[in-house]
Image (cartoon, rainbow over all chains, first blue to last red; front, top):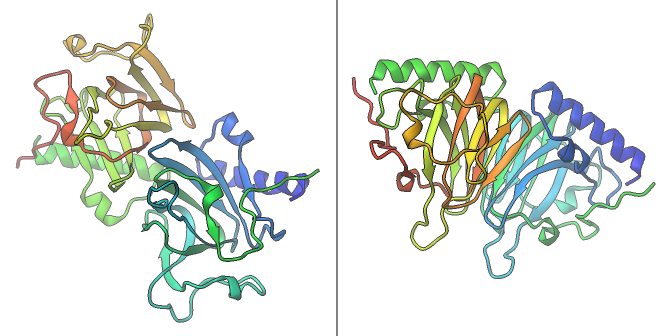
Length: 180
Length: 180
C-alpha cells in the first residue's frame, strides 16, 4: 500500500472513532494498522485495527471497517502446541455480516467484491448490530463485511499472533507493507 | 442490598452507558451486576459491571463507577494451579484513580470514604483518562475510584473467577445478595 492511501484510510477511521466517542492514545494513533492483505483493493478487501493489549494470556483490539469492506476468510490455527486463537466480536457501531461454519444462509446480506467468490467458503451468516456479539472457536474459518455505514467491532480474544493466520486466498500477505 | 436500591443504581448506570453510546443486549441489561460487597454503602464502596464474555481463556467486562465510588482493594490469587487473573483497565469515559503497588503517591486524588483508610494499603497512583489504560499483574493488590463524574472502564483480562478474589477488608462478601 502507498503511504498516501494509508494516511487517507487512517484519517477516515480516526474520524469515525472520534465521532462515536472512542478515544485513542497518541501512541495508538501512531501504531494504527491498515491491512490491505497485499491485495491492493483496500476499500473492498481490508481491515483497520488498533491493538489495545496483547499479552501471553489475552488480547483486545478495536476493528474498524469501511462501508462494505470485507475481511477475507481465514482461520487461527494452533500455535506452538496451544489451541488456536479464540475470539469474540462485539459490534459497537454499524452492522457486521459475519460468516462462519454451519448451514449456508440463502440470500446472504454481504456484497461480494468482484471475483472474490472463489476465496469464500463458509456462508452461515451471523448479523451483529451494536451490543451484539459472537464467539468464533479456534481453528475455524470465518470472514466478515461491514454494512453500508461501516462498523466498529471490539475484539476480545486469547493471545493474538496475526502472522500465523491462514487465509484461503493464497495471494494474501497478512503483514502490510507500506511504500512511499 | 435491597431490590429498590439495586434498581436505582442499575438505572443510573444504564442511562450513563446509553448517553455515551455503549449499547447492551437485553440479556446483558437483565444480568447487570451491582456489587455493594456486603458493606451497605454502595454509593461510596461498590462497583457495577456487565460481563461481555468469560471463557476458559479470556474475559471482557464493562465496569461502571458512580461519581467518587471506590472499588475496595483486592488481589486475584492463583486459582487451580494457574496464575491469578491478569487484567487491563482501559478508561473509556470519566477519570479513574487507580492504586497499585509501588512508591506511595503524595497527595493522592482519591477521596477516601469515611473510616476506610485501614482497608487500603497500596498508594501508588495511576490516573487514567479516556483512551488510557494500565495492566495489573496477577496476585497484586489494587483498588480504584472514579472522579467527580463517574467512569466507564473496559476490562480485558484472563479468565475471571470473581469468587476467588481476596479483599483486604474482611467484612467483604464479593457475591452480592439482593433482598426485597
